[in-house]
Length: 283
Ligand code: DGL
Image (cartoon, rainbow, N blue to C red; front, side, top):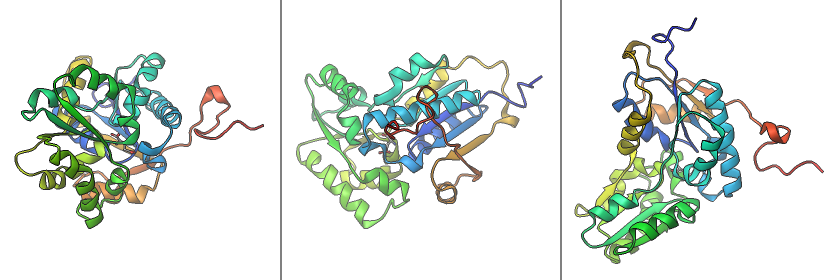
């Protein structure tokens, strides 16, 4: 019989790539007794420029993988996958699916200038979820939606301080500042790794909202209460669909103690003759 102390059911955490590692950090800080499985779908990143159909297909596959590995909850540590696929995933699985959305509501409560700048992927910016948030909370606040193509890619490559990254940040942030934004919402988990660089462009009077802690609080609220802490057995396993040496190097660069990365097994949609996402049916 499985020993619950030695083998606690893990929590699945999933992103298109390395961005969700910032969320994972917050989850482990708040829930140090839990074990985690982290999946980076780096072979298919960035999701921001993929079709929503492709992102939903991958989100279904990765979530199925995590549930098959007995995840007791799945955190979509990716705004793009969340806004595209969370509702569908909740109809497919019984475990809690924790999804992200840009922190537009808190931003509208904090802004004094009544101008908020949202940085996110093109898919997130165009999503119905963001349109709904703007309709609900944007009645007395101007919400500037800024898609940031190329930015998540820079983070994937670990180029936080690269001059090209700085130029991209200037391009995406400066117009919002000129329009009077005093609050910036990081609507893509990759951007958490650029928080210092974003703050440097924005200046000290601008609030930068990064949602990892809020997600960790939400997860701790929905998790079934554990009978006893199992600190000794808590582990984190990493999987990547892309280059495992690259992911190992990234983990080392952010000070992650365990840098064991496994290859994410190839998956197919069982209802679709194991056809990979994005591939048309054979004629
Ligand atoms: N980290 C993801 C997000 O929060 C997606 C970045 C990407 O793959 O484009 O939206």
